[in-house]
Image 1 (cartoon, rainbow, N blue to C red):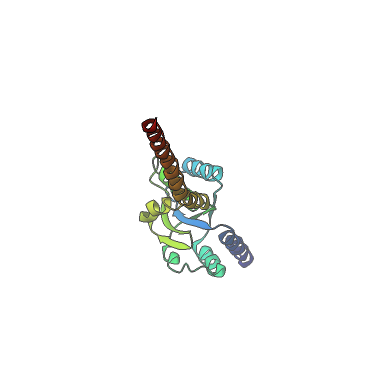
Image 2 (cartoon, helix red, strand yellow; image 1 turned 120 degrees about the vertical axis):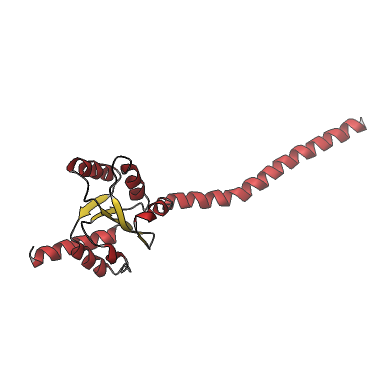
Length: 173
């Protein structure tokens, strides 16, 4: 591969690393062509881009991005496929689902929510990450909870007050 080709690949990878808030480094070596095609189809349906590149080119692109991923470079051995995603947990879910039929892909490392995750054992943690909409929903739920309690207390108190007035009216009559 000539130098200008390498520079082009590094530039493309750098742009992808900057465009996507999450990426996973995986090992897909043991997948046959049908499994690879199936995985790519599932990723495509979920708006996840998968690209295979040489480890040295991946490392150089990461360095140029300015991300603090030095510990991630230690896992760049063997074949590496990169999954780029806007949703930090979706690739983890897909990997888990895909493993029901195959033992691969293996997670080498991931960058999600400004954090580095190293090793395949981090997959359950990555699946727990909440996306922006889920976090907004949680915050709204927490904000609504006290208001619902106050409204419930007022409504309940209104029924009690009405009952007391009705009782007093019956006694007076």
